[in-house]
Image (tube, rainbow, N blue to C red; front, side, top):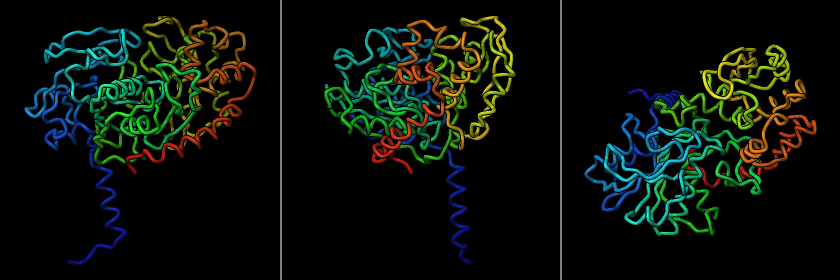
Length: 410
């Protein structure tokens, strides 16, 4: 048989990989016959995003396996079944489908207590994240890892793709003076790691409380590369929270979500395009679109729009502003977008600037999500977005060097 040229063979193999569905950690674990769980009492930290590539709930996959003794469930923000709104506290109850106790990790406590862990040999974490520092799931994971370390319990992360890709690293590194549940560790706003990679970093950098380490195992994915965005994985998207209904919204969350914390400008929450809009009654849509497009930010376009939110603080009000269109994901810097938007709003509408209209509580929340008060202060002092963003270059470089040894995928 005639041998194929090497370049053609390489092209065929590369194409085959690109069109192979990514297997999340739960699939890989199931293929092993749940080998790492045999003979152990298992606690599962999950929510509706914990599914196999065939959309079977991880809860059901473990509960129905003869090889697994599942004894407890633990729910993050939004709950195990995803039926709780953002920020709402949930309590312990019994899961109607499995009869298992469900312990809340977003209620009176965010860290598993000794009582919650009394019958557990291993904690399994399986939650889809969206790659942004302020999304609370990675902080739930970290606190559970601390509890596992304290009680000598194994901790297994079933890895999942970062929908922003594993290469995107953006924004400022958190100033630990602003540490909160929407930012607990010194990482950039977009940190370019899977939850398994980040768990490894947490463990080995000594970031868990008291510098303790847990007995950590990451069940790695198959057929995933760092360059992949969600659509490249061929996996179905399960909403990670009520306002992240699809994988594209995960991108927009990192592009404009911090502005929404002020609650003075609508960002599409309450309308059909959460995190894709910037609107207010006092904005001149064409003026704002022109000013933002004149900045010539790579990979993004701003289109003038008018809309009425269906619910929330601006329900029924006619709002004017822009829709954010991401034209080229490989060129756009998501986190930078909101800094440019806020700078432009202040310049065009000083009397209604987003910080001046915000309550003290909302300003505090903005600073926590931003990971510093310096950005807000500098914007109010008239510094340009470009000047502010330039200050992050050194922080990003240091983080990239630190992060490199924890990367599990090419």
